[in-house]
Length: 370
Image (cartoon, rainbow, N blue to C red):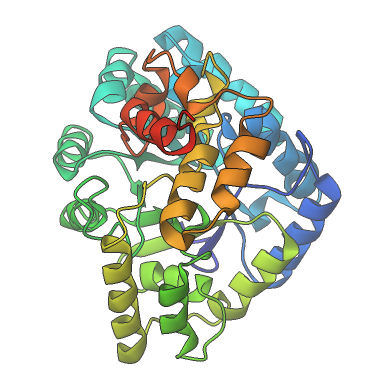
């Protein structure tokens, strides 16, 4: 961990795109600017962008920079292996896709009560620890999406785990569903460094409701993203805060306040508390738009986009969300009412949302019968 230069990481789940392909030219420029600013941590997974995140890293990072100049994290995801025997071949393909011969961090991905059973049955943790012994992995950790008591169980059963990646932001801090604070406290209890994912909650804490935006504007301190990232990074034991950046503008903004990082001051903390209360009163769908749910949907419903429409309707109370629902997101894809309740989406949702019930509510809102 001593090669980590700063506490701001490049999350590679939301890269710049040209249609279905990663915009390698734009990503390469972003990588150069990021490295030039003194940062060096990249986070990916095979399931990000259908494997294209890993190969983009190969083209724009591994081929351009010496291996010892950057930190690379990859993950073992539940959907890419079925048996213990498949783990090593999958791991080797990940190394090749990224163009490296070792990973600095290898995480058991999206751990929760359900898939932890499979990881144990397939000796996934034991395999990762052996890969570390062989020098193919520097550090073994987990990314986590469940209640704090499940995290306590995992860290108790596998004290060899070196780092934990959790969802942590000011909206989810006291959330009963995400339990950011409680999970963070479990990590501190076990002495595990924390990697923060979703510090801006999939963009929710950048595109704020007007009344929340005004709270931060009164501080005259720049973008709304700066308060979200600095909130997360200001806690003790936060090894890294990830940001999934899709364009140079986002990157440059993040660099502007993370290069010489300082925690939130008292006035800024009070502003964050005001915004927390605003979000608490709105009852928004806590989706982070990871899109894991869309890959296996038999009706090709763009679930996160429909959730975004519903949140926009609650937030802005105008006609725009109706237009996007009827004329953009459901033109070539399924409507909310097309859901057959197969449950595939619920199984992979990191937020454990009741997706089928939420789609029913959305159908009632947007598909009212004349």
